[in-house]
Image (cartoon, rainbow, N blue to C red):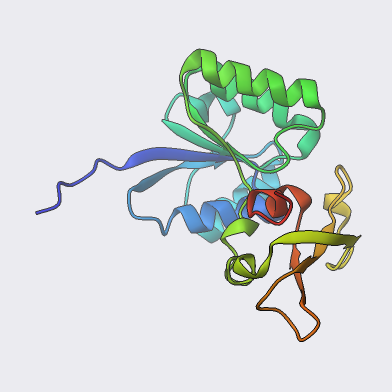
Amino acid sequence: MTPRVRPVKVGVVGAGALGFHHIRLLKKIEGADVVGFYDHNAPRAAQVAKDLETTAFSSLDALLERVEAITVVVPTPAHVDVGQAVLERGLHALIEKPLADTVPGAEQLVQLGRERGVCLQVGHVERFNRAVRAAAPYLEEPRFLQTERLAPFQPRGTDVGTTTLTASTRSSSASSDGWATVSSSCATCAARSGFLS
């Protein structure tokens, strides 16, 4: 018999377009007890609380007092400030990509996570994409990289750049000329998937 695991009390900071989906999907995960969320936009928070039947907290501190883990889904320039508030309390954190808008900011969050002994994870999910996983065995030595934006322009995404990586690589199981082409939503994900190793 498998022992029952105590649900983890989780919350979300940010209830914009992406934060809404984090809240919605967390509510479906067994073992996640969604305590609620915080968003500085009160009318948006009220609407999301109603739509997803969850609690909108009136302040970040009020939410952080009630949880064990947090998902940070705020605009990238706010990642460091919000991340620090979370990590300083010794809470585990998933911070949407990119971790920060500067390398020193990212290093600061990583160091704080280490000091507090908590799990700090960045929301790189494309490596779990079925298409990316299926293509990985066909890649051996990338020879050509090309980037282009495939998704329609979204003003909410202007705080950081988003590109799609196309990698052509020599492969014995590719097309008749020995070349295969695969795509990933970001170079970091491609590197972690072995495209750029």
